Image 1 (spheres, one colour):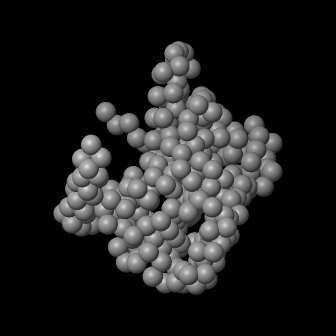
Image 2 (cartoon, rainbow, N blue to C red):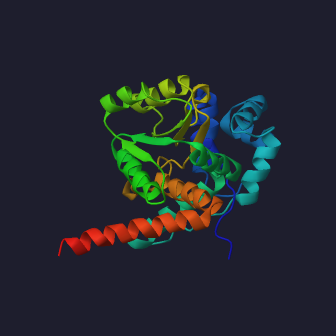
Image 3 (cartoon, rainbow, N blue to C red):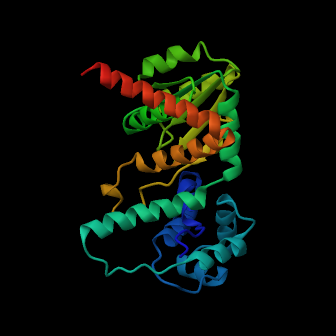
Amino acid sequence: MEYYVKSVVPMIESNYDNFTTVERNIADYFIQNKKKENFSAKAVAEKLFVSEASLSRFAKKCGYRGYREFVYQYEKTFVEKNESITGNTRKVLNAYQELLNKTYSLMDESQTGRIARYLNKADRVFVCGAGSSGFASDEMEMRFMRIGVDINSVRDSDVMRMQTVFRDKRSLIFGISISGERESVLYFLRQSHKRGAKTVLITAHNRPEFNEFCDEVVLVPSLKHLNYGNVISPQFPVLVMIDIIYACYVEQDKYQKETFHDHTLRALEGVKDDGY
């Protein structure tokens, strides 16, 4: 059974902040739509009281060549949702499945490969985040430290500012900001990039200015338009993406990295033994 289908909705959501008022009206229609309709440019333009040219501009901002290509993909992956589902457990599980589907739709495997190569080349890796993103940065530190990466998680804004002074082309910086608005994280990325470091931003909001100081902008799904998104941990989409990057990195030299992992686990077991 095929669980994952490419959907245009996550791309709409990640570019939402870049839309004009008219384009947000169009975006809301495609995000909230629950039934199959006539999605021709003429029909949608009349329904939303917008021009067909606005539909075309909207589609191009979503990364498509035009409205026809956009709506083809939208119709191809459109699945009517069963609104009769009951039970809190099923609601939560369905929300997680929808997030996984959205992650699949946003995935760029060539980008993940580039990031894995950055990790291989970097002498020092820093991952920064604040709030719930800070917990995700701590998890990333623990995961990659166990396979031999010299990595530090930074959650304090003052430490982020100080650390930028020492960054250079041998450094790799990951910034985690779901909103794309955490100034301390953006400052760390911006200043580190100026000093020659490779920079990667993990975010749910795609903005053109990020490309000025980020070598890679990794998009994760937004919880904003998700049914029952308020019961899902905001860390979940980030942790899924970190796992994907981790899997790609390990695969590049699997034997050595699995050996590191086994050694670190044995070291931890030794500490436990000493404690008894």
